[in-house]
Length: 152
Image 1: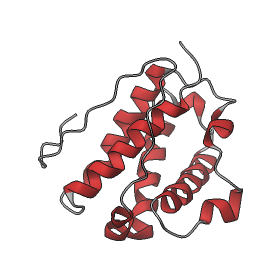
Image 2: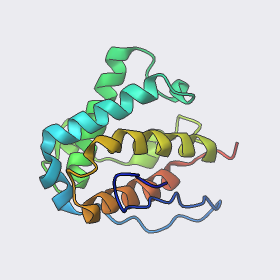
Image 3: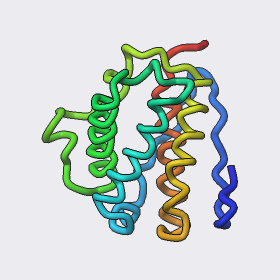
Image 4: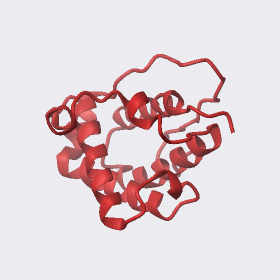
């Protein structure tokens, strides 16, 4: 994908069954640039788009539960970006593969997820350095491969 207001080109890594690329955490300065509120706003935007998406059945069915899921996700991303370990404090160790195991996450669902994350990131273009934005995208791109647990 290409962000028109930026020189960034965010490619989606192809999924290859059985191949899990190494995960590299985002630059901690991504969180410093957007702050905790910015991260929470990002995940709220993202989860509200998931709520009406073609993959909405993978997520909570009430808007209130979806907002809670978004904030739990924000806790995870704040922690993974070097911030306060809210996720560990509130929900225990992430173990994201285990947490996502009950949901049939296909390669196609991953693509939808990434497209919606791209849209949620748009308001941050120009407010976050290209290096940090790329670092965050690279993380979620690989992270999304690790969450695939169903072929079709």
